[in-house]
Image (tube, rainbow over all chains, first blue to last red; front, side, top):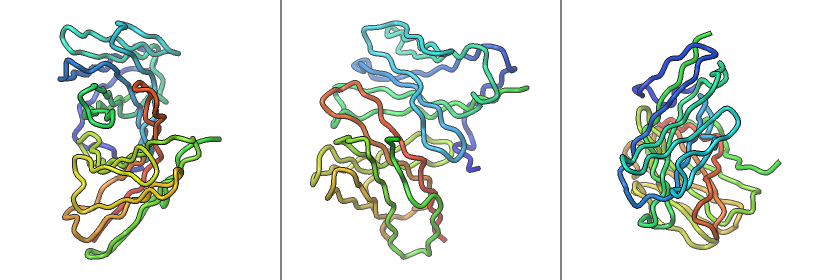
Length: 114
Length: 114
């Protein structure tokens, strides 16, 4: 399959461990945040989102934490599985952005060791 | 199943030729987007359309053109004026009427120009 990003930050975890992927955003006016997962050769897939009036949101095996004070977003994956291996992108939206555009981070590659 | 279909998955062209990438969605979304993805970089917005017969330039529109004659379709033409066209191209769509809705992506077209 194609390589999504040859020089991405990489996080390597053991199968069964928890993973934490971090993201910093720059616009203090951002009010909506999303995490995407992208497997090799595929388009990004929505994982979870959070609005700025929340600090934490949980999904199935995933939790997103938002710290607006330091403009930091994290994605926690519980009991990481080989199928979680992918590139993970965060994105944020600000009311300042024309057309409600999302701004995407550069991505983090997660590698799960069996 | 509803979704976004991009075709073809792989496309090869000679330098100097225009090429059109197809994007079709049956999600009944008003807004559609084209992104370019290069290794080691995040997604960069080429063009977007929030309604039929209207579209706007994104951050890297030079050398590209689009049309939006139908709600379901948003083809992207990579012209010979695009200096570095080899890349992975992603089409996306989203609901309008709410600021906080995620983008839904297709599985991309990898264009190679030699």
